[in-house]
Length: 427
Image (cartoon, rainbow, N blue to C red; front, side):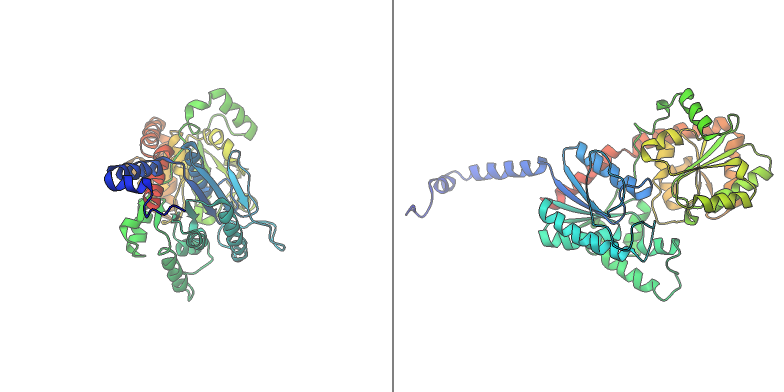
């Protein structure tokens, strides 16, 4: 062992301290440019063709394209998307299917997810834990503390409000205050929260008293390259119309998303009945799942089965082509707190949009949407009729909406904002 108190290098630093400063600057520069390793936790059956899954998918894709490593821990079911590092839990012995939305089985799913997340985190050693939805934030907080890394919470809607929307909880019931308190506790866990809309940012700041410095709005975005009307020649669209047995001479009113009451599907069918009775010429193309049989029966009950086509599930890879058949797009979602990413795909495809008037819809569409008061079926029908009667005006709106999607809602820009946040939390 060297008997000198200081090494030669330490003596050099004493006489030339600028060397240490230079090394520190270089270390900071390297930290600011080196690829990050991100572990996402998604309490859902990723990937499925709806809503928040698309946000997770696109975030992973853009971060990978920017040179970062991303893995996601999720439930045992779901589609394995090419090029993504997806790590799944073991299946539950008594539950082999999956229920969309709130379910009493989710507690068991999440126990398995928590255990798998800890295992994968110890293997993966991430720089950042990125928890999607509230269960992902809870599990992520345990993992982040264990590894002493920051937690980012991807907030896609209020837990308590979503449970009310799914009829899993009554707002005036005895359990609602407890769920609200739990949600408030969860919002205290992360170092930062990404919000899927500015309305969600306001909700967290005002109702849950989250400090603004921990909030970063990151609205859903659109893949304007894939969702581009120029990708689909008339012949290709015509062939798909024939396959789906759509009428060639009627405007198509399109919807793609979950088929549930809180998404407004009953209202959409009622609006179709109103328009049919009024003699308007239109055909409704309703794409998505689950509950297809239920809504087909409702369409028959309303006597609109002849002007409505249900496709069932449409794979995300096929969504741009199927959506391109629409002349008018509709967004009758009843929730005022959840994101509504489907609007971005409508916009990217240059389709005019009729939507219920909500803060999230206003954020995306601005003054280019055709709005109906929330829950007003007659106004929803009238909004569709307005565009049916003025196709040129509809096409003009659609072109402006596509331009807005391209300039305001780019996944590349969103990815840069996410990485800036990661860098701030890890440096």
